[in-house]
Length: 330
Length: 251
Image (cartoon, rainbow over all chains, first blue to last red; front, top):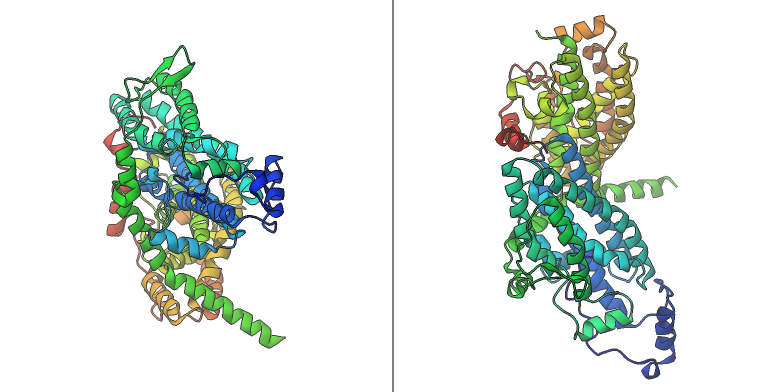
């Protein structure tokens, strides 16, 4: 998943005794592993929280096309070009499913798009980093999609039906993305000296930002506690980050690459890898709009939307003419 | 002239390579999400067809060059695509008009290739026809929708047609390579496909409320490689850069 710092009600989690009967039935259904569907009653906070989360996820898929799209026209072989293009196409498709899921909660895709373009809604911090060499296509697949999968797999069991079902499809494709990224890294890590250098440089630049994708520790966050009670967040940020490092560190070793963190070592006592926290000051800078590519990304999305206005209007006008002609003929 | 069959296969493969590349330049910046997905589909089909055509060209040539070697290590004068496909994307209207004009020719040419005396060519054509049928359906709908949309969309589509029409004629020119293919029953004479193209064009432009330019002048030099436009060189600097900068690497 590509959602960070999602705000919930901020009120803290109510106990079942504090709830009105309607809300209690809702919460008991979730506790029992049931699904909430669009026409079911739901607390307003649940609905808003989900719109923020699914919306941010959808926006991340859309903006996420840009750093990889940056290399499609420079892909080194026809096969790599086709695979990368298919991957970016999948991301557009994920955006589409997720906007559809959000629409079931009473918000339109156009409204969400406007909030993205104005900067009111966020997308994942990771897409504000530049892709500078072909190895970055490997690192993005391996680390960024790898981190996303950590979150998305449990979300297949999330309480909101349309979101859970979208996630099932997305997960299938994400694991293919992660594998193709690792495959690029393998080629680079086992390639010429220049290729190995590119691979190491990509890992150096993407390691910290990948760890940030899970968001800062939310052990004491009231927002996270509520989201977890509603089962729209399944694990804590620290839990997922640890799982990601445990899985990724041996892969880096297999590739013969060095994780840019001297403290990253398997701890025999815990059975987990120790690692250093990423630079959280940098993370908050990126969130405030000061990442290396925030301006470029929003500019690109705004330009695409503005340049496309005449196309959307033209096609709508044609459809309206056809409808009118059909009505007149009846 | 080098082996006409090799030349002929490079023409097919370079058309799809260059147009596939152009369409892929749209990645992530289309007017609506559905178009991002559809454009990627078209680009993917064209790249897949390129692998088949240029792969076969390399086999026919027999000098150890595969599809990637042909795509990434030839310079402008060795490219055999028609000038139409190397024209820049322009706005979405120009991209879709270019697509429509090419698809209209491409589909009829591929259909004729399905009965080629060369079985491999017939098989590639058969696979491609399925994909290109969809390309033409979609580009036709878009040209009609935007031509008959708002005043602005109509004007933009007319401008795109005026800009690109001088590149239509080249697709129907016949030369020695074509004559050799006709003689061996491998491919049709392109000039024979023009009447059906013109009829389809007239019908679509009518629905789109667009006017065919009066002048039938045709630029040429792409499919023979004699004189490409300046645009192709810039495309190659980007497309071939990694392969050229790191020639000893595998990817």
